[in-house]
Image 1 (spheres, rainbow, N blue to C red):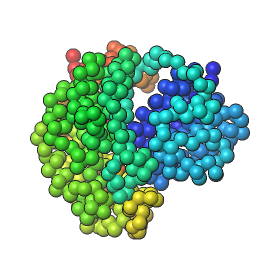
Image 2: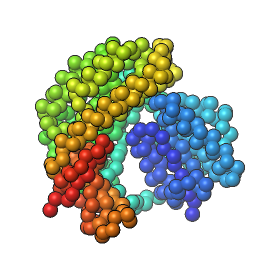
Image 3: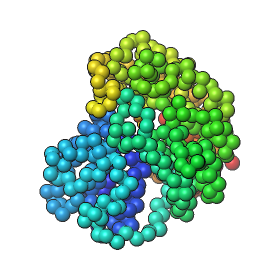
Image 4: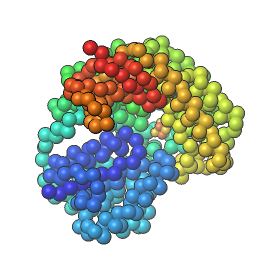
Amino acid sequence: MKKYYIKTFGCQMNAADSDMFSEYLISCGYLPTDTPDNADIVIINTCSVRQHAEERAFTEIGDMKHYKAANPNGKVIVVGCMAENLGDEIKKKYQQVDLVIGAKNTQNFPEIMTQSGIIQKGIAAAVAKNDNKISSHITIMRGCNNFCSYCIVPYVRGPEQSKPVDEILKEITDLTERGIKEISLLGQNVNSYFSNNVDFADLLAKVSEIKNIKRIRFMTNHPKDVSDKLLKSISTLNKVCHHIHLPLQSGSDKILELMNRKYTFENYYQLVRKIRYYISEISITSDIMTGFPTETDKDHKATIEAINKIGFDFTYVFKYSPRSKTEAFKLKDDVTKEKKEKWHKELLDLCNSIAKERNTKLIGTLSEVLVESSADTPEINDDKKEFFGKGRDNRGIVFRSAKNLIGQSINVKITQAKIHSLIGEVEN
Ligand code: SF4
């Protein structure tokens, strides 16, 4: 049987696209494999958001030279943001690449595969896929209109396009038939979803009506677009999880303006207060970027103060990485590498200590966990397995049980806290 291998870089949207490629190839009679060595098709799904992600993808593409030498009939396909941004360079420089599909075209993957002759036309057939997964994600919109000055996404993914509501509801209903109970709705800025007079809050209400969906998550949000209507929906729709990822990026108004984020720190802080007023137990996670052009110690200090004032449940901290085509690329990348490293470490240490502190406060409380997976623990001599699931607030929780609880919602009492996860015991 023919096989395919997919290497995915970048965000959850790329992961969702890779799932779509995978599903299509399975419907064409291919099987997944976890190494390119024995694959007939290799797909490298790339990311352009940071220089580092591009470098890793280039290494992967370069390595395909050996794959191609050993498998002259194998096909190497490069897809995603880097394929959109640097497609010509990739085609010219890497003879081992057979096909390049840019991010604006990923949804046409099946047609492109048949047009290129890699997949025979008419071969795809519906398959009943059952991979025991409990949660899945779907892309509800593509592209972005915001043009944050550091971000390449609007250039490589194009303007916002919302998927029609009926298509979304059908995709989710199909997923429930395979056992999916939790769905994550993905977009660069889901708050600006709009299709046929349905906005994002309306969409959440419609997805809530799908009987076998137990939980709904969504990602990611732009602070300027979080409406009162959306907050009311999150607080009143039982299936919508109490977690919001709300990238702050900087605590300095000067840097926020240069980033073209369209809010001040005070706007952001008042929004956080409102969110916590509507949904008191919500977890708020964020992204912070450090080392933006012209950033000074004073700006860095403002970010530290902002993080302390808000107290995020978890924060991803990134170093600024200049991307050609963006507005920020025109500014001198004047924060030294050493300073970026220093600020990054300071912010990461602070954010992690706040996350641990907030997790520690949950010790002794109960969390309703939707159990996703299990692992054997041969080092512990009992008949129990280790299970993993998430609480409604998106915190990962690990516990042990002798019963197979995958797919069930159970109460777990939190006994230990770490930075990234909690440990607990099943509450009978
Ligand atoms: S909202 Fe800003 S950071 Fe997010 S994808 Fe759009 S331009 Fe990029």
